[in-house]
Length: 432
Image (cartoon, rainbow, N blue to C red):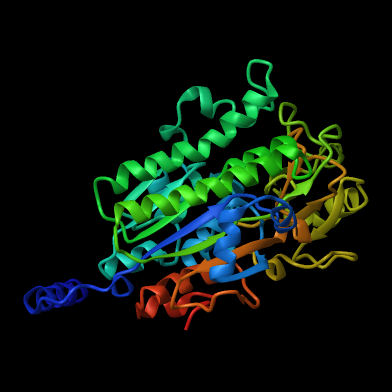
């Protein structure tokens, strides 16, 4: 209430003194996430608009996604400035202490938001008089959008002929049509943004341009289709900037452009646990009557729960040398483990399994996809990050060590907001 009153008094002073509001005094901030963006592939692509943003602002090709390197987790990190072991969204499925299956986005996103135990950037900004919005291509990104005035995304904004083919390589026998429809998903989401800003004022926007992710999964990041998607996304980012300039004439907009994770080429011809054939159980454990459940985390990582954790050593001995397993993290004291859940920052109390498995990219886990992510390998972890904020960052500067933890505190700093909840965030602002 105090903040709203202060803003109203400031408005009255400006109104009666005849002063104009400087664009720098009333900025908007847009965070544009290009889903599944590999920095080395971005460097090879023709992206004139992003190149212009890089020259006019700060940039790094080696920001880091948090573990697990998946959309769901990193979007909640972007919204909270915290690791998964604090915001509680490690994946879609998990087993609780009683071994009952739970989901982080069911039965509704709104109800799921209530179980995120930390503040979101949307709540903080709204409490300080800013109107905020999340535009989520996949839908489940909205788990981190608690407090946003506008929340749109998922299947409800896409026609069925687009949505149901999003993971198909070809449509009506045509790979060209399959690619075209996936790229079209970005334009449909941007159309949704336009329909909102034509009718109401927004101060903060977070949007996920996810066509690159669908194309990366289906074709792989080494395919020309992925490069075509990157170049199309450059045009989509340009379109967003043009729309905001046209709808809010004279207003300064600051931009943060990043990604939720990278991508690794995988072998679609060597599927370990096909999705249509009990994908959640490992035969080597089933034969030993070790009751368990496996949940994939982006296709290159999986979390293994045991009903009887007392059998962890038996289970570990049965899986440690399987050819599709590259590394195993566990809090159990076993020889040869790569590390612990705590070191990965994925050990939220009551929501983590016994083993966290990183898969070998020469295999595919559940789905015959040519591209996957989720691991702690460099190809999945490293992502590009841009910040374009005239007067707030030096043109052509280099961002130092950075991660998705830093986006939320940077947004609050761009708005010059002071709030005790910001102190809880684990990231640092890119701007002074």
